[in-house]
Structures are given as C-alpha cells and as structure tokens.
Image (cartoon, rainbow, N blue to C red; front, side):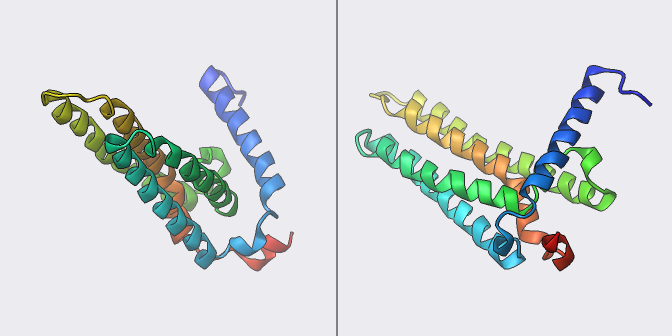
Length: 179
C-alpha cells in the first residue's frame, strides 16, 4: 500500500532514517550498553539537571557568575545525552514502524511520563515569574533566571523517556552486540 499523505511519507522517511542510523551506531560504545552503565549515564544526567537548576537559581541573585556556569552545565549535558541515546538505541524517540509491540508500549509509557514531568517542572518557573513579577522592585535578573529554569525543565522532560528506558531496559543480547 503506497504512502498517500504527507504524514505517512514523513513517518516512512523517519523510519528509514532511524533504521539507517541504528545500523551505523549499534556497535558504538559497546561497554556502555549494559544496564548498570546506562544507569550511570542516567544518574549523571540527573545530576547535570540539578546543576542546571542551581545555575538558574544563582542567576536570580548573581548575573556575573550565574551565566558563566551554564557553559559547564551544557558541556556535561551534551556528551551524556548523546551517549545515553546511542547506548539505549534511541528507543525513546523511535518511530512506531521501527519498534515491535512491546517496545512501542514501553516507549509510549515513557513518553507519557515525560510529558507529565515536562508539564509539572515547567509550572515551577511559570509560577516563579508570576509571583516575583507581582512584587514591587527591580526584577532585572528574573527573566534570565526563569528562562534557564524553563529550558532546564524542557530538557528534563525531553530526556525523561530515554532516561526511563535506559534505566529499565534489560542488558542487550550478546549476539546483538557481536554483529
């Protein structure tokens, strides 16, 4: 049955690209593909997110030091996130046609939790903006600090599905790593 509309063509493209990338990266970082090593990456990402949140709070009080701390936070985040995506097979954002029924169920459950986490965490800086903005006084640092907190909340929520799957997936079959 040919792909008939734009969404179906895009999903077909995503699936082909995902499978091509999966073949390319499936042999990368073989020692990091165990559950215990993936959990190390998940914990390291969580610590990075705590650090990013702390940077947002520091920016509320100190705009000289605060923004300088964001660079190390990003330098920690990007390699950890990339490694987790590689070793977990990008199951958290895989297209439906690239997964079996069990993997789809796991992915959808993790995505649902990720959406809830995103909504709840983004509510915190929104309330911060509302309440601090309602107070009299100079609020020069508030938009920047709130912006960092929103970005952090969105990153946490976006990473949550892969973190859940990286934490819960069993060790890969040794035959899968050998090929």
